[in-house]
Length: 402
Image (cartoon, rainbow, N blue to C red; front, side):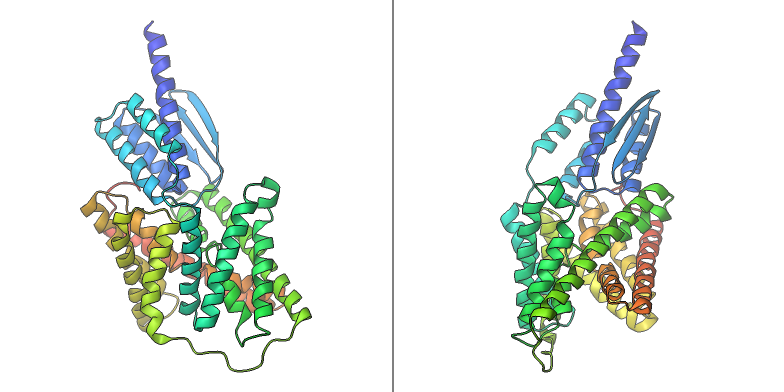
């Protein structure tokens, strides 16, 4: 009888931890954060847990009982991450029963995302307009980039409903965006490459690459390697699709000759604020977190700019990440929320995805040396960001694993 009780208890705990693992994965937690959180909860409950997480699977073992979850890479959902973090914290403190935790996690999985498709589409457009201005574009280019981002958001949402269409989504969307940008360059003097990059900026997997570097730097080699491969495939699809679209446009029309419009310098810092807000929406953040997200975004861009002027473009991003992670960990302790609430929107402004995108474009035009240079630069910047992140966590550790 006692053995049956122990057996049933072990199965209950395994099911609970599996639900917690799935919820963390659906909220976008990377492998090292997911495993550390599960270990913290298991240790507090006196369980002997073995867990192995990757972007596509999670394996758990509790007292000889094993379960494997088949999952898929997910975008960050910060409001869901806060809710899951609270469940895990209450479990660790013993103020929530396993049955209550399972019920809370089930309710959370049934809850719709905080920001719906219409708001997400607006965030896509506004974020791409801000990115275009930050890249040095003029207002016409920025407006076109925003329109193309709205187009790409709608097209990707429709294509993602079909698994066969989803596999070619990035290639098709990039081709369409680049084709329209190339055709527009026959009407108004602009850089179609810059417009296409801004219109696709949300799809560029710079954050995934940086997360992969962090996973490998913390010893999660399988997860980091898998995530790196996934980011590389997305970059290839976007780069090849953009090259195809621009080539089609150049075959149909001739670009307008003339000087490109100068970027509006006064719009730089307002666009940083707008970009922070847009990424907060795209990451499904809560309204109460937006002030802190904007503060983290301004700190990330401002400190990085100063650091680049003083230390150069190789070290500067790492120092910017260091300052921003310190801020994120401090606000996490102050507000009792995960550090990721401000860390992810701030970090995404620093990631080198646009550099990798340009590298793939260079390869597609047979500019091998330029492509290799861009890819190497992307990796150096990514490692600088990871170094800053790890150093800041050593100086001021986050409140909890998330």
